[in-house]
Image: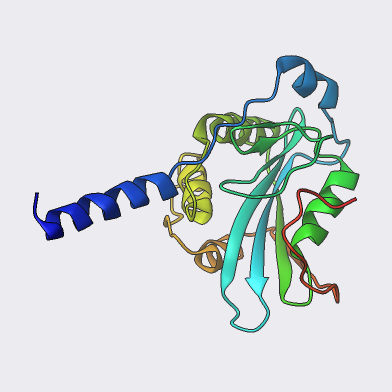
Length: 197
C-alpha cells in the first residue's frame, strides 16, 4: 500500500467516524413519563442559532407541537434528564425545556432566530412521525435533515434542501403566517455543558 493510498484510507476512516454519532434511545417508560401535551395550536417552530459576529447560522432544530410537543434537534449537543431522547427527538419539551434549550444557545456570541408556523393537526402529526424516523442525524446535517423532512410534507415540497441554517430560515420566512422572534443574551460563552439548570 503506497503512502498516498494509506493517507486516503485514513482520511476516509476519519470522515466516516466524524459522520457517526452514538445512537441514543431512551427507554419506553422514560418517554411515556416525560410526554408533554401543549394546549396551544398545532405548530412547528424552526430554530436557527446565529453567530453574532459573522451572521452565520451554526445550528438548526425544529420544535413540533402535535399530539405531543417534542424537539427535533438533529446532530445537536443539548440534553436534559427531564427530556429523554430517541435519535435526536427530545420528548417532554415543555416550556421549561424550551427556555433551557433557547438559553443553552443564546449567549454573548450567538442569538437564536425562532420562526413559528401554525399547521393543521394532521400536518403536525406527519412532521412528528418523519422526525422520529430521521435520526440519528450525522454532524453538520441539521439544516439538511429538517429541509428533507419538510419537503415530504404537502405544501412544503418547494423547500430547497440546504446544508446552511440561514438558507433554511430564509426560505421558511417566506411562508404566509410565519411569525418570528430573536432571542439575545448577555451571558458569556462557557464550556459546553450538558444542560442548563
